[in-house]
Image (cartoon, helix red, strand yellow):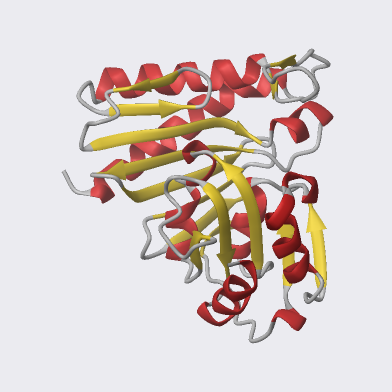
Length: 259
């Protein structure tokens, strides 16, 4: 089965997980903290409901496929095809009632990201790609995505989820890039990568990411013509410190400052 055959199923996963999550957004529900004392890493019933239904659908349709999910762990992660799920990327925004969160659905084939979807069910937007092309589907219809050409950091718009995530040498390196850009904004999580793919943002720089935070976004960014890697220039699939850029020029300039 080719990777393109999975796209209708990814849309089905997005639809059903969106229906499961919707009742919990702006509902006044209480988030649980799954972090150690002194930190806050929220999880909601929406997270659990969204991932549970996607896992059930995958297991029913593709029982030999693996799954890696934020809330319920891994199963058959050594399979050729592995689904990587984050039911609510940006749970802090979700808890605060801000719609800059999304459901991430990625597909690995032999360890390589081949399909990705970011579904923002509240706004009715979907961003999806296969590494060669990327598309938007939403209230304005469907269109192909493409990054914009930005030739210098001094002209760039930079997003990060939270500058406080950077510590020690990473903080110094990040601030070195931040000080050179035209505009910096915060707290968009997965939405920032999709805005980069759509031609509105030039750089996204983050750290401490897990595979479920990034795998689905790689085919979208690359499919739109962007570049995404670790700070060391390696594949972004494993997470960690990540940089996404709208062009190879901006990627190279920022990567030199980071590494």
